[in-house]
Length: 443
Image 1 (cartoon, rainbow, N blue to C red):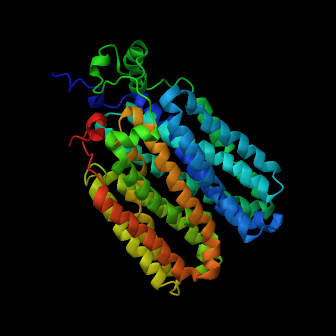
Image 2 (tube, helix red, strand yellow; image 1 turned 135 degrees about the vertical axis):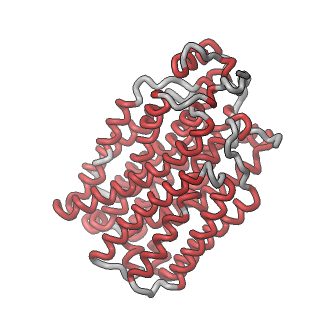
Image 3 (cartoon, helix red, strand yellow; image 1 turned 90 degrees about the horizontal axis):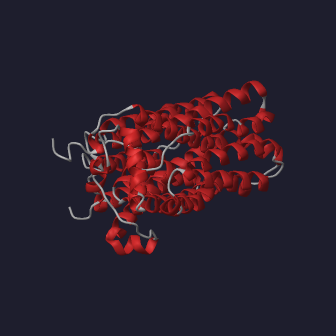
C-alpha cells in the first residue's frame, strides 16, 4: 500500500471516533435546547416580570450576542492553548448559568445569564467542531459534521416538547425550572468528555511531535505514526491579518455571508415561534402544533441534507437549499392570510429546504481552512453570523408590530436569497477530499 492509503483519513470508523461524536454531538444537542427553550417560556416570563417588547427582544437575542464574543474567543485561543483545554468550558458555563436562572428576578439578570451561555456556545463551535473534524476519516467527515446540526435541531425539538409539557402540567410559573433544565445535559457532557486527547494536527503545528505520535498510536493503533498524518505543519501565529494575507479572504467572506443568511430566519423563528404563529393566524392548538411540527421538520431537513452531502456535493446542496427555502418564505409573505394548512405547508417546505445550508455551517468552515487557521476562521464566521442573527431576532417583535407578518416574511426571504447569491459566486466543492486538499488554495 502507498502512504496515502495508510493515511489516518482513510481508516474505518473506530470506537474512538464514535465516542468523540457523542462527546461533541452532545454539545450541539444542548446548544439547540438552550437556544430554543427561551422561545417556549418568553411569554410567561415576560408576563411575570412585566417585560417590555424591548427587553423581550434583548433576552431572546442575548445568547446570540454572547456567541459573537464566544466565537472570537473560541477561534483565537485554540491556536495557542489547543482544543482539549477549552473542550470543558462550554458545558461548565451551561450548567452554572442554567442553575442561575432559578433565581433570576429581572430582565437584566436573564439577559446576563443568557449572554454568558452564548459565550459558552460560541466557544463550542470552533473548539468542538474543529477537534472532531481533525480526527475523522475523510469519507465520514462531511456526514458526521453535518449530523451535529441534526442534533442541534433535535435539541430544539426536545426543548419544545419538554417546555410545553411542563407548562401544561406545572403552569406558567414553572418557567424558571424550564430555563434551568439544560444543566442535566451539561453535567452529562462534562462527565463524558473526560479523557479526550488533544488534536495531533494541532500538536504537530506547535512542534510537539512526540505527543502527537502518542495520540495517533492511542487512537489508531501501534501501526500508525506521524508518517500517516497527511498534513505536516510548522508553528505559526494565527491572526485575522495572517488569515487574510494568506489568501483565504474570499473563503472567509463566503462562510460569513452564507452562515449569516442561513441562521437569521431560523433563529428569529425559534426565538419568537409563538408570536410568529399567532401573526400567521395559528392560535390555540394550531399554535402549539405548528411550533412542534416545524421544529421536527427542521430535523427532517437536516437529515435529508446529511444524506446528500456526499452524494450531491457541498456546492449544489447549499445552492438548492437557499433557492427553495427562499421561495417558501416568499410564499409565506404572499399567503400570510391563508388558512392554517397552507401556512404550515409553506413553513414545512422552508424548514426542510434550509436543512442543506444548516448542516453545511459546520462542514464548510472546518474543511476549507488549514489547521493553524481553522478555529480562527470558524470562530470569526460563527461570531459574525450571530451578530446578524441577534439583530434579526431583536427586530422580529418590532417588525411584526410595525410592518406586519407579510413584510417580515419578505425580509426573511431577501436574506435567504443573499445567501443564494453568495453561494453561487463563492461556494467551493470539497467532497471526497482530505482536510489538506480541501483547505488548499492550489485547486
